[in-house]
Image (tube, rainbow, N blue to C red; front, side, top):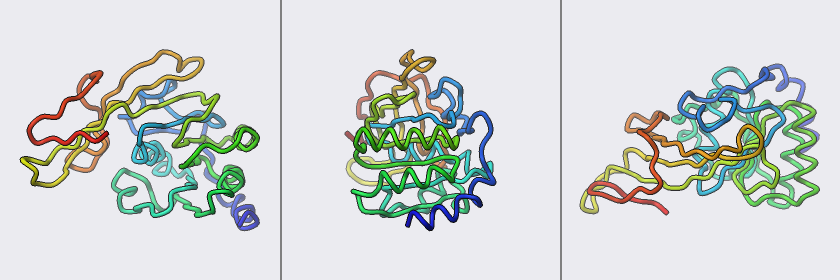
Length: 221
């Protein structure tokens, strides 16, 4: 598997991003530089698989290759609806015990790496971080990651569309807490529709600390 990824690396590197990897306008407020920093790690916790994918959407649309590891059973239609260009997405399935080494091999060739699942060991994290810094790959992980430059935590999720136990889930409102190190140290809360009723990712009204369920809404914890 690693040999195959190594062979693909020169082709994938043709679309390396510039100083910053772009993100969707609605997600810019989550990041201190309003984009993903190549070579840096962003951690997403609290059940944010959709948020991981959305963070790669603008990059793939701009021609940057994105690799995804640990996303077994990924719904490609859902990823496409969030804005991910599937022509620039490489999904690699690997046994859990090999995901970290596969991620490191993939990071050497893509501009954005998405890694889902339990955080690897400290030596594996260091290896991946070293490869990412050397190759200029922005890393977004769906777990706690000691030393991550930016930390995003999905504080609450509310689906709308259900009424009296019937109906269809049509839109989801999230409150995401953003923090981290350096320029990202100032904690802030950002409200998002992910997705809205048209399937798009956009900003919500001023974020709140807690969201209560009302008629026609379902709170997911």
